[in-house]
Amino acid sequence: MAVKVLIPTPLQKFTADQATIECEGQTIAELLDSLEQSFPGIKARLCDEQGNLRRFINFYVNSEDIRFLDGPNTSLQTGDEVSIVPAVAGG
Amino acid sequence: MTQAMRSSSPDGVIDPLTTQTAATFTALKCKECGAEYEPKALHVCEYCFGPLEVAYDYSALSRVVTRKSIEAGPKSIWRYRPLLPVATDNPIDVGTGMTPLLQANRLARRLGIKRLFIKNDAVNMPTLSFKDRVVSVALTRARELGFTTVSCASTGNLANSTAAIAAHAGLDCCVFIPSDLEAGKVLGTLIYSPTVMAVQGNYDQVNRLCSEVANTHGWGFVNINLRPYYSEGSKTLGYEVAEQLGWQLPDHVVAPLASGSLFTKIYKGFQEFVKLGLVEDKTVRFSGAQAEGCSPIAQAFREECDFITPVKPNTIAKSIAIGNPADGVYALDIARKTNGSIESVNDQEVVEGIKLLAETEGIFTETAGGTTIATLKKLVEAGKIDPEETTVVYITGNGLKTQEAVQGYIGEPLTIEPKLDSFERALERSRTLDRLEWQQVLV
Image (tube, rainbow over all chains, first blue to last red; front, side):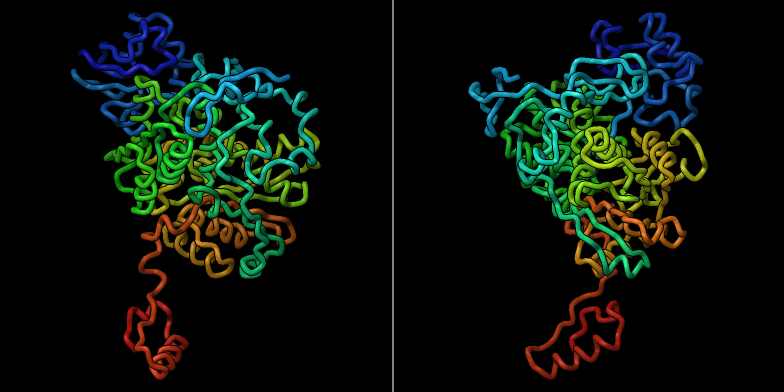
């Protein structure tokens, strides 16, 4: 189940400066494990010690915030686009 | 210490003759884990993704910043230059800041309180909102960091400001806005000839897109990769109020909450003035205002949560319609620890708030200001504002930009013939009818 993942600048050192990568996973949680296998160390940046997604990081599946979907259990389909975006402020 | 520098003149050309004083800021520091970074175009911590904030050398600042040094400075935000994260002595100064602090006696009487002040950024320069403060700082820093193209994700006011000040500074500009913005805000951006991307989505979606663009284009996004510098500009709203109150802090402030950044920076501004011995320390209560159709911070406050659950905005108060507020938890913390409050008001109350401020004080604010005034009213009615205390309300934007919000709620002119008796009949009618009933009547 290949999905496209957009990597934010602070994490691109893990992905050899690639802003977009292909990865596998049926859910966001599985995607995180798969990312860790391909790019060791990346998961610890995205999740806290308890394994929860850090509060200043947002995940989007096809432009929708996963907090409006099923959170880490949000299912993924082949061809989905997952965007990892640090929280930003100001309007 | 002075050193040679390369700074650009207002037309963007490098001017090697300009000199720069030593920067008073030392690093960018993660608000969550404390990790430090060089003061470059970075906004999140690599380790925990917490927001980065500018760190200053306060002992050096306390030697150079005095009431006198500030009073001798320009009548703009740059009178506080050592407290802002720029190194140059030649910042982009378009007259931003030092807006009026107006004692609002008529509004105070109407509400039943005694000492009320309005900090009126509806007349901030050049684009009539507080955003000119943050953008002046961000673009000055952008120039120092070598950016030639600047950008932003905006609910309108920020786009106006970024486009205008970029035009003045000779920087290329591309701004991103939701496609359903008020006409005044779109026109007030296009006039400066930036590239404008109207995104079919809400502000949070615009924000996400811009973060993705910032990853791949080397642009200076004022509220993304330049955000640590940009947000510091809001501190001047704290500094100015303290200075304008005669170098003292108010008892209570009421300010609008969108991302929460403005709120936290007013607080930081007060704290810094205390730290530098410019004002006496005291607890200032901080209360925040949100529109019910987008009130994730008010909801967390009400439900006593420590986290913010994002929402999808649905309100006329578009300038503060941020459903996923990045600084929300910090705003929440400040309201709680200062014994303030965070309230939300519905769209009808927002319109009433706009009208109330206009009728009593002659200030035409936009929907964010209507939200703030309506919240003030609610706080007074709930007994959460001590009538004797000095309260400052922050009005951050101008009503001429959001005319749609009040159309249909403020009546129409009485159309008359150019004859005295027509005027007399109309005058009589105006005294007997509610204004909303006039509705273009030929009397």
